[in-house]
Image 1 (cartoon, each protein chain N blue to C red):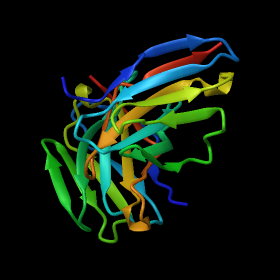
Image 2 (image 1 turned 45 degrees about the horizontal axis):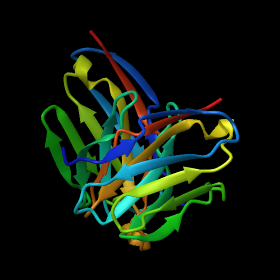
Image 3 (image 1 turned 180 degrees about the horizontal axis):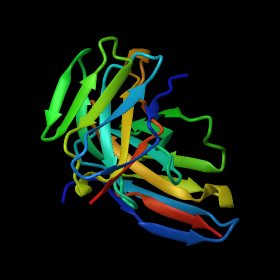
Length: 113
Length: 111
């Protein structure tokens, strides 16, 4: 069974601080997506990483896919209150022949002014 | 707006009643997914369709749950004889390639 664990589960920081969220698995994924979700809304896609070792940047957010495609990290530089939300990673099971996506447990981030 | 839409956004029902939710995916997307999400957790896979074929169904999906995508476009998720434990956000997503795009969800409350 493929599982994705995220850490930390909760994070409360001051505006301007940096943070890193981790997404780990013992399984290999073809690709991994990161989402942000606001309360009462559906997740919004931030990025997809596909190649082992790949690094993608989205303004102050940096995403990295592990060399073995089993883990990923999200680093936020100089966090802002608008970054507050639930961050989710999701891996696709294409390597096992299915297009089913497995979601991580989520990291709830609160950025304080 | 050409995003994924879901209807209704909120549903309150009494235990034992049947409910049906609808999802309209992005028009050119051939895959459609249903997830359930409870407070503070990540979405939990329920089932997915490729065109009109239901390709996988979670073991978590009891026989009270059924989903259809009759013409490979919109999909419905029905829950029969609802229980309080069914209270959750039900999310629909569609995809054409790797990326999934989510709808706003249907929040179900079973009293």
